[in-house]
Image (tube, rainbow, N blue to C red; front, side, top):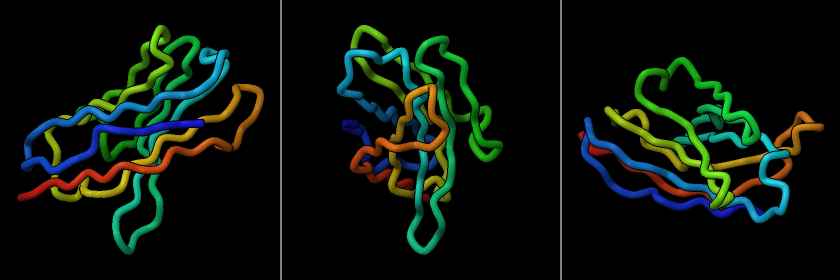
Length: 117
């Protein structure tokens, strides 16, 4: 079970941090990702993190502005968003899969990020 939080309204150029808690006893066995979906658009991959070793992958559209991290002690992954643009406005979802799998089978409820110009 995943629980995402941290969305809200921010001005262009501002920052927000999203959090995603995974309810599991084996946090390090998972890969967590962030996706986003803007109104009328398809869901877009934002980035992912291997929760064991911390290796991250970021979409080109957010490189240099977003970072992904995790806190093993809190079973939580983070998406730090900076230099936000109006086109970053979307509902953001965290997702996860066991590292032995390839498809994201666990999904959070989504949190809305609105960037005003």
